[in-house]
Length: 210
Image 1 (cartoon, one colour):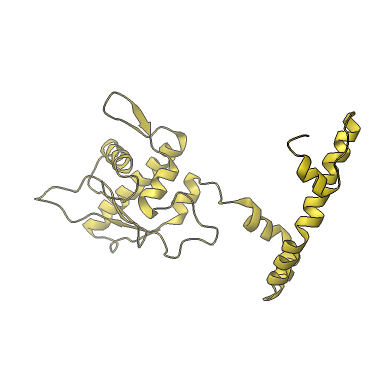
Image 2 (image 1 turned 180 degrees about the horizontal axis):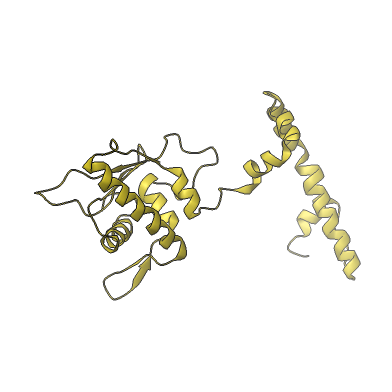
C-alpha cells in the first residue's frame, strides 16, 4: 500500500484497507481507472483507425475467424500440416529419376512421422542425444519456426539432389530459405535417409546447409 500510495492517490482510491472486501473494492477501483479511464482514448483511436478501411466491421461480422488472427497465435505444427505445406516437384513419370524421387518422398513422410513422435535423434560429442523437432525441420527449410498466419510469401517446395559429387550421391539435405525450397537426398535406404536428415537438420539449424 505504501509503495503504491502515489498511484492510488492519483486514482482517488487511497484509503485504509482493513478487510478483504475493502481490498477488493480498491482493486476494482484501480482496474476501472485503468480500463475505462486510461485506456479509453487509445482504444477509441484504435477503433477509429480500424474503421477507416472497414476492418472493424469485418471483425464484428466475422468475429470467430478474426479471433484466431488476433488472439490465437500461430497454428500448432503437426506432421500432417508440415507435409501438406510443401509442393513436391517430381521428374516425369517413367523416368529413373522419378523412381528415385518417389522412394525419397516415402522416406521423407515416414521420417516426419518419426520426428513428430520424438523418435528422430542423433548422438553428438560427449554422448548427448539431441532430438529433432518439427519446428527444427521448418527452420531448416524456411528460416521460420512457425507458419505465418497468412502463410509464406513463397510457396514451400521440395526438390531432389540428383547432382552427385565425384560420382557419389549428396548425403545430407539442403535448403534455400529465400525460396523455401527443401532439397532431399536420393538413392538411400531408409535408415541412411533418417540418419542424414536428422544430422543435417541438427548441424545447421539456421541456414539450411548441412
